[in-house]
Length: 375
Image (tube, rainbow, N blue to C red; front, side):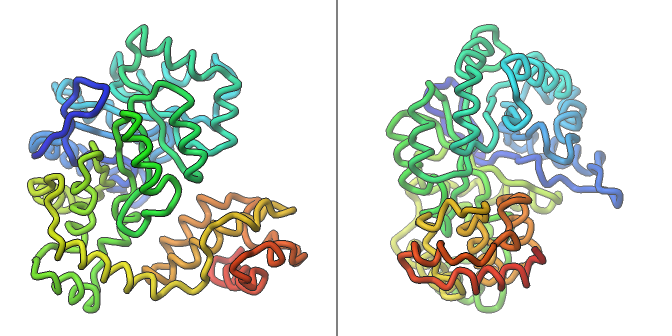
């Protein structure tokens, strides 16, 4: 296992982190504890020392599971990260209460890394109003947490505002070779790194979509003369950047754990060749050629008068086409549109079309989104 020291900390972290959101499940959709425990402990035994979970993962089951899985001395061998569910917070007292509950669930007296979960512009301002900065300062001062960070799902300008809003240790962003301009993007990553923050990556393989291989993609990957799998290509693209401290992988099988551990042995910074980087461009062009709606997510169509999240609708619809996976795209669609932001809320007013610089027939495409996702 290779390690990198995260800025503003004394920690050398494994470049592969274990994301505990996609653990193996039983037929009744609870965590398959024997399998999941074996996977977590195997990863730790082979060098993984960063584990990431959250209050809501596995319907609240992930944190208590980890509290049990990290018994027998395993807790002392890892850096444990979890997240404050900001949507559950109505007061400063809620912050302290939830953190206390998480410490109990995880069977620990402190958290090494603690994040505000999934910040958007509105939730960040809600947290500022409730004095989250004071809460984080106090939690660090009394050693309930060691380092504070945030995970993020909004635009690059919002990301930069949040980076500047507190003395963070690290930021966690969605980033991969297909998402260089998505959410925080490369510009946000560079901005945070320039400010001295550590960078943790989530969704390195877009929920597994970038790990899938077809006859076409296998041929394209092999054109560079390397024998890497699609998953390995995706992870190596991230590890190539020295600013990135940890790449999280939500592993669901022991084979995925073993494969990723093998890939991590080669994850050195600045190790990809010019020829390698050209292969990524070939793959990106292949995927982008499948995009059906030419939406650039510029946001000029927003806000919709009835709340339709048009860029999110089109992004999920394009994902279904690009990666040939409607089920995974629907999961993203439901997660990021919410009940009020779905395409079926459209009132057919046409204001969005008059504002769109790409002159996209938005109403027509929203009907296509409804046809694919059902609402």
